[in-house]
Length: 149
Image 1: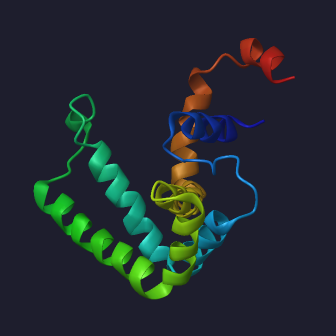
Image 2 (image 1 turned 135 degrees about the horizontal axis):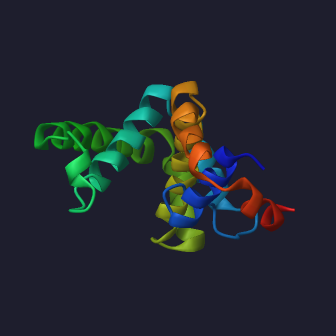
């Protein structure tokens, strides 16, 4: 397993990239597919940016971010419009069925599908992969190897 995949799995565990909860094929999957099918690459990048900007507000992280309140406000505007379009125009039937079957908390599960796709696209960019590969020089592969066998 490459260190890039290990980092991706670690991000999954941290909840940055959320897996779909163990659910049978259901309206959650249908809603998640609809959300993903109705977003562009630009939409998904905007979504990841919105998550990044929100996370950059944490006091332990804010020192390494150049995010401004204006950036956050603009991102909130774009994602608010995207959320509204997806739920009200593009996927209302799928969202309605999901809510009926699984309740209001299921909305987060459908958007986890979209978030996972968005993160996978972002992380597959060569510059992002190169940045993650910087970890290679600081890991003791000999000590890790027995764990991953």
